[in-house]
Image (tube, rainbow, N blue to C red; front, side):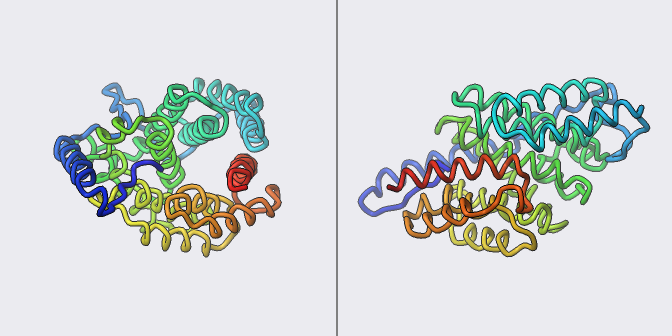
Length: 312
């Protein structure tokens, strides 16, 4: 992440200026309801319905959903993932309020933006579209929706979310983190920091609901906030390190926490040996045998190989 502020005596004057700019950004954003994300509250009843329950659908539709999910699971390059996205979008067009499809499509879009898009603008579009789909799924929760309509920010309204909302919560947080890290300029991050605050509150709610969800993905996602945020806005590398350790200790085996620790934390602290150890561990795993999704494991191992080669 690039939002961390390094406080060093030799650069005290610059540090004061940056801290002042962050404080100004926070003050300007105070009270803003529509923070990171879109949170489109449709007046005609869209997003409102049976929360996280599947309506009766024709067998042919169910079969198409199964095929699209299998295609997504096995996507290991841009072409196959793009085809999976097209299939999921076609199905969602037929059932716009299907929360499971909204979350599946959001995840596929985030992965495409992270793994295969090269230009910032296109990455940004992928991540923002993923946010929209995840938000639509979250808005199917009537209590959460009512809190937003009453003027609460998404992070504040997250207390109304339930265990069934966890997949949408986590993918929204993932899309938001990637949007800040790879889809925005430094100035954009400064202007839109409140979105990371919503990410923190959303993942704190997820931690209260089920910290073991997806083999440690929840504490890992919360750690991203503490890595990305500057100290003046709550950033805390030590707390981030503890959260990643918690993610690693969660039952099951996921490649994501150790890869993320190498990419986002060790790269900031400059601990090259620890970085190398994490990358080598990730590369030593069988991507088809661990618990984290195969499609993500392939991306994570490719990225780990790239980082390891950069250490030579």
